[in-house]
Length: 400
Ligand code: ADP
Image (cartoon, rainbow, N blue to C red):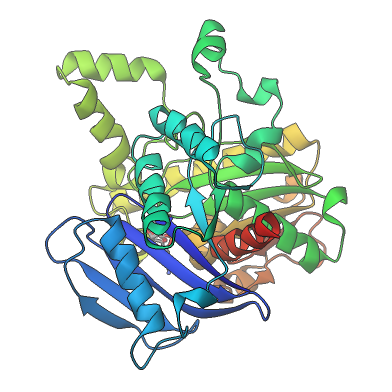
C-alpha cells in the first residue's frame, strides 16, 4: 500500500510517501514559504537520497500539494507511475479537542469537528484543513485520515486535565489540558517497550520530546496520564521561543506595565521567550551549546533554565506514576544534545538514574540506545521519533 503523509503548516508542507508493504520511504520533502515570495520545494527520492531544491511559485496549499504530486509522478526521480497508485493520504491534525481519542477516516463530520477546534489552535488547524481540502479537490475519491496530536492524551483523568479556575470555563468552553506531540510520545513509548524487551502494558515511562516545541509525558501501561503542554502548546517546558510555565499574574503585570495589547503579549510569550528570551542569542540550542560552557553566561543560564525545568517535570512524573522504568529522549534536542541530557540527569542517582556519560556523548544523529550504566534502576533511552510512520500506520488501519 502506498500512503502519502502530509503535515500542512501555515507556510510549509512536509510530505513523506511510504510503501507500507515494505515500510520504506519512497520520497520525502518540504514545501517552504507557501503564499510568500521565494517559495521552494525540497524533494528527496528514498529516505536518504540527495536533496533537490526547486524554486517555484506556491501561492497556496493546493498549488503546493499539486507540485508534490507532480514531483512524485514525473521526471527522472518519479516514484509513482501515476496518482492511481496512491492508496490513501494521512494528515497530521494538531487539535481534535476532546472528540477524538484515536485517528479517524476524514468525513464531512470530522472536518466540521476540526473546524470547531480552530478556536483552540488558530495557527494550526486552518492550514491542516487546507491540506485536506486541497487533496480532496485534486483527488476527489482518495481516502484521507486525520491523525491528531491531542488524541493520545485523551486517556488523562480529570485531575490531570482540569485547571483550577471556575469550572464553568470547562463546562461551557471546554477549557482544559489537551496536550500535544501525542503521535511522537506514542511512537517512542512503543519503541521503548521493544528495546526493553517488555510489554508496553507493564511499563511506566516518561517521554521527553524536545524539538522547537517541547513537551514531556507520563505514560502508564501505554496510556498518557499527564503531559506538560496544556490547552495550547505554550504551557510546560521552556522551549526555543516559548515561555512554558509562568506565574499567570506576570502576564497581567507586564501587560499593564508596558501597556501591551493582547496580540503583543501573545507574541512576547510565543515568539520572544524561552531560551531565545533568556539568552538573547538564539532559539536554536546548537548556537547556545557551541563552545559550551565558555560561550557566555547567558547562554549557560538559558541551558540551565531549560534543563532544570525538564528535571523538575521528570521528578513530578515519577511521583505521578509511582515509579518509572525508563525516561526516553526524542526530537531535535532530545536526540542530539548530550549536553542537555547530562545537565538534566546529573545527580539523579537517588531517583534510580545513573547516566553513562561516555555513552551519552556518542548517542546522537539518529542513533538509538540506552545511555545508563548497567546498575541504573531507571533506564534512559534515546529514540529518534518517527511521527510520519505512525501517521502512515494509522492511515492503513483506518482505511482497511
Ligand atoms: P520540530 O519541532 O520543528 O519538529 P525538531 O524536532 O527537528 O523540530 O527540532 C529542532 C530543534 O532541534 C532545533 O531548534 C535545535 O535547537 C535542535 N537541534 C537539532 N540538532 C541539534 C544538535 N545537534 N544539538 C542540539 N540541538 C539540536
